[in-house]
Amino acid sequence: MGQIVHGFICPGIPHPLLCPEANEGWQRLNEGFEALGRQIRESGATRLLIYSTMWPSVIGHQIQARPEPEWVHVDELFHDLGSIPYRFRMDAAFAHALKERADARGLHARTVDYDGFPIDTGSVVALKLLNPDNDLPSCVLSSNVYADRAETIVFGKATRDAIAASGEKWAVGVVMTLSNRLFTDFIDPADDHVHSPKDEEWNDKLLEFFADGRLEDIAQLSRDIHRQIRVHKVVNFKPMWWLSACMGQHNRYTGEVHAYEALYGTGAAVVGLAPREGGVGDKEFDEDAVETFAGDRNVLSGSSTAPQTAQEPPARSADRIDADLDEVPAPVGAYPHARRVGDLLYLSGVGPRQPRTDAIPGGPIRDEDGQALDYDIEAQTRAVIENVKRILEASGSSLDKVLDVTAFLVDMDRDFAGYNRVYAEYFTPIGATRTTVAIRALPTPIAVELKVIARA
Image: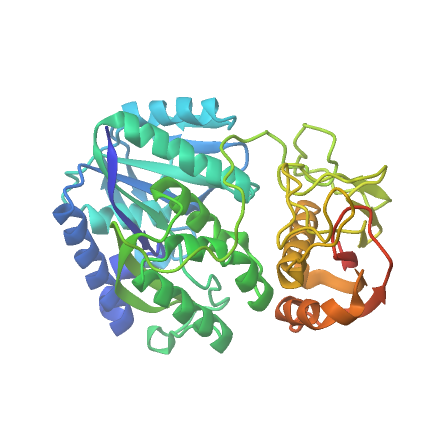
């Protein structure tokens, strides 16, 4: 069976290839590429696979299948740096096999085999610097701009399927930057720096996780980072979702940061990830591992399976929202998970029950005969908030957009302190208003329920 012997991330902005001598940091990135290339060869890799955020697609995922694409590339932004002639070796058979594997998992994918079809700057830079002798056949994948986390994970798993069937040893990686904010004016190379202290702060955290080999934790950190950085672009994390699903959704890797520098305002890193037996840390979030894509990006309708086109603005009237029951618990009555009115989301009461199983983290408050049981209010509260997060995200919102919370406790004296501790972990930075009410009972044997209003 084929296998992944190495993983990597690298930037695709062309300066480390075309003018490394203009800036000491760009030169160090160039040297980082060289070190990563050596590491890939030492791993025994016979093939090179790149998922590029600089090759955007809208209709499905595109897979380069031209056996020997040849062209002279000029970057659309930094054309003053000069042209990049290339002739690459592509594994066309693998490209077609990957399309079939993607189709089998419910995705839409197409192969590209056209003379003169332009390969994106990021893939050109990575292939020229990591595979300078063109001795490793390669494959390049697009990044769909509308694909959500579930679709991206399924594409990563489809890629893993094709790799397993290939019989080859693969080095797989993504073209991306960490902070993803370029300067909007041309700069003197000597003045290059990461755009803001907040960007630098998160870049440092990501580099720490990369060095520890915590790939899945990085993939899961997207919610926190989106809440805190000022540029909310999923492109920062889509490649991490794909890479983690492709290599394995865990933290069992040996990471090495070969270089990290400012690159026209972004934080650019060259990182290698080698699979290993032991790992560091656990998942940041416990989310379902989707296996197939249902073909529906219109998460606001809940009932239609037709994808929403780019031209259709989301309706701003009152919309019923029924989230996927594989992600959130089913309602216990005749009501939706949420309803959107204008720019606001109104969630029905949310408890701690788990999707599909209806299990209650921390245990129920009473047995089937109505006898009181001991239970963990902190575990129940955490499960409630995680369910709220899932419903909000399925509705196109997020926890950081919560405006108001009404909490219901069946035993205020016993449970307020524990509930309040867990609540503070999530909501202190959000600052939503809150009302906590003592009630006699809830419809299921649970101790806490939240009712939430959030921005859509």
